[in-house]
Structures are given as structure tokens and as C-alpha cells.
Amino acid sequence: MPESSAIKKAPEGSRRAAAPGEYSDRTVLIVDDDPAHVQHVRQGLAPHGYRFREARDGAQALSAIREHRPDLILMDVEMPGLGGVEVCRIIKANSGDGGFGFIPVILMTARQAAGKVEGLELGADDYLVKPFDMLELGARVKSMLRLKALQDTLVEKNRELDRANKELARKREELLALSRTDALTGLSNRRYFEERIQEEFARARRYRAPLSLVMLDIDYFKRVNDTYGHPFGDEVLRAVAQVTRARLREVDMLARYGGEELIALLPETSPADALRACERVREAIEGLQLEYQAPDGTKKEVRCTASLGLASIPSPSIQTPEELMRSADECLYAAKGAGRNRVRQ
Ligand code: GH3
Ligand code: MG
Ligand code: MG
Ligand code: MG
Ligand code: MG
Image (cartoon, rainbow, N blue to C red):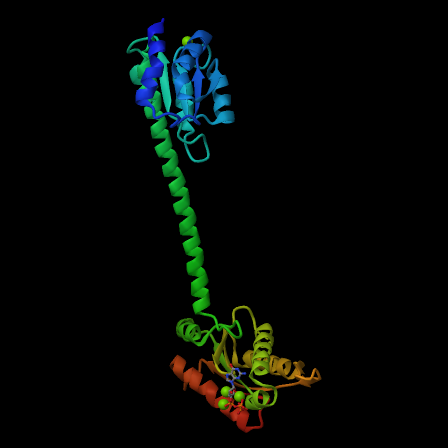
């Protein structure tokens, strides 16, 4: 039986060993089939101000762990049914992130060396032989709580790091998307287009697949600006971009190439299919009804048209992306020359 003198010494020991209240918010689970021993341990640790939970056997211990998530377990080895060593094995097997996490276990046994090695090998973090000195108990409990606190901090820091990393990855994605986007229209920008045309051109050549390129320029756009102002011109530009995007397929890439010029890359698209796509776009732009509101409040319906130049590979005269673009640009120039609001290929 433990000496009562050890219990009396505890307050003095706690003043020396434990900064007052340092771990006083921690929960200690005491597991023992002997209520007197549980009481004894509680009294010994009382000066530290821990919160206590009790269990009489291994099964109770496991449900108490699930329910109360203790910061430390003081556990008897010899108990009827599930013994301390078994419970310790279960706790350590469930120490993963989805399980109990890390909970230090101090085994308590009446036997000297018998289960000591086994217990420690199974992952018990410390070991006390009954009857034990209350000062030693207090010191070991505190050292285990310190370990647990360090572990908790580590786990929390890791979680923070994970969150920060995810946020960083999200920001990087956002930034990348932003660096490829034209601010006015929301379409891809010229830089990204020039990146993509190299890839698409190479791919089309490798697989001998057709690839079409469209250049689109709004007709008499200067007049729109001159008549209705630059902000309204911007509105027209956005509307043209939107309606063009809507008439193309998901896999077609549409970019704002310059001021009021759009450029589209149509993978796996023959000249005949591309021509049909261009006609659809041209008609949609012609059908746009934009409303201009004058400063005096009067409203006016504004319409616009666009000219389109189309070039495709394979073609004997086109060997590079630059030649493909030049060819489409020449067709656009021809469309303008032929009266505008038309497609040339
Ligand atoms: P066309 O193409 O039919 O020959 O005549 P155009 O009047 O459209 O002539 P051009 O394509 O050479 O001129 C483009 C005009 O578009 C010049 C410029 O003021 C205007 N523009 C270019 N970028 C923007 C823009 O971002 N917003 C607005 N509102 N206007 C722009
Ligand atoms: Mg026992
Ligand atoms: Mg021009
Ligand atoms: Mg123009
Ligand atoms: Mg232009």
C-alpha cells in the first residue's frame, strides 16, 4: 500500500515541480479496478488542479477516451477483462489523425519488472510500480503533459501549415488565371494565346489533324468611339466578345488579340466547319442590339458588324504558327476590302 507520507508531501512537491496552474486545464483519466487506488492517485495529484475522469476497467477506459479525449491516461495493468496492456495497445493503434491522436499513457502495476518491458514496447510512454511516491507521480505526470502539449502544438502547426499551403496553391492558380486573362473582356489575352498556338500547332502537325485560325476585327469601331464615347465602345467590345465566345465550342480558344481584334483557335476543325463557325459568329454580332443612353437620358439602339479572316492547316503554304496567323490576317484584310461584315478564307 502506498505510504500516506507521500501524499502529504505532494503540495510541497507541486509548488516546486509545477508552475501553478500550468496544465490545470488538462484532463487526466485514471483507470484502475481498485477505487481506493484511484482515490489515492487523485489526492496525490490534487494540488496540480487537473480535471479527472475515472474508469474501472479497460472497456470503460475506451469509452471514456472517446468521450472525454483525456490529455493523459494513468492506467492499472492488472484489471479484470481488458487489461491495461491491451488497452494501451488499442490506444496506440488508434493514434492516427482520424483516431484518438497522441495520448500519453503511464501504466501502473504492482508487479516489479514483469510487464514493464512489454508495456513500454507496446507504446506505454511511462511506467510506475505500486506503491509509488507521490512526488514521482506528480513529476512524471507533468512531464507527460508537457510532451502532450508539445505534440498538440506540433499537430496544430502542421494543420496551419497545411491550410497555408492550400491557400498558397489556390492563390497561385488564381494568379496564373489572372495572368492569362484580358481584363476588359474576360477572354484569354494575347500572351496566353501565343503560348497556346505553339502547342496546338505542334499537336495538329504531329497527329496530322486539321487546325483553323480566325481573326476578327470590328468594323468602323472608331466611329462607335467617336459617336458614343470610349466607355460605350468598351461595352460594345465586351458584348462582341461574349457573343463570339458563346458561338464557339468549349475547346476553341478565343482571345483578345489587340484593341478590337479577337483571335480564335479551332482545334480539329476543317476549313468547311470553321467557315460555318465564322458565319455563325458574324451573324450573331450583326444581330447584337446594344442600347446607348445619352447624357440627356434619350436612348438609341446601336448595331455593329465585324469582318473575319480564316486560315487552316494542313496547307502546303503554311509551315509555322506565324504563317498561319499571317494567312488569317490577309484574309481579314480581304474581308475588309470586300466591304466588311463578311468572312474570307
Ligand atoms: P475597320 O476595322 O473597319 O477598318 O475600322 P476601325 O474603325 O475599326 O479601324 P481600326 O480597326 O483600325 O481601329 C480600331 C479602333 O478601336 C481604334 C481604337 O480607338 C479603338 N479601340 C482599340 N482598343 C479599344 C478599347 O479597348 N476600347 C475602345 N472603346 N476602343 C478601342
Ligand atoms: Mg488492478
Ligand atoms: Mg484594322
Ligand atoms: Mg476595326
Ligand atoms: Mg483593329
